[in-house]
Length: 116
Ligand SMILES: [Zn+2]
Image (cartoon, rainbow, N blue to C red):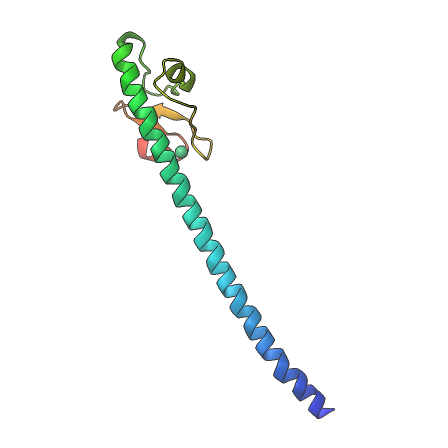
């Protein structure tokens, strides 16, 4: 009886130790994955913003009288129909692109707080 409980004990602790170790690395890997994913989304949003910003500048020079004003969501359809955007682009998190009070394009999802 004593021998049996000792055997159970000797195999039980390494299993617990390995399980904890695996969980520890799994949690670390998951956190790293989500951190990288978040960075990729922000980089993607920034590249869309650059394209929209360039298209918006071109639109302003073509139509100075009907340019987008601060606080207005940029009409992607308008930029697309003018041939200033090759295809529709959106923020990966569903943000909209707006003009801030300095006349710069920003994403309502990723940069909203910076504009206040
Ligand atoms: Zn965004």
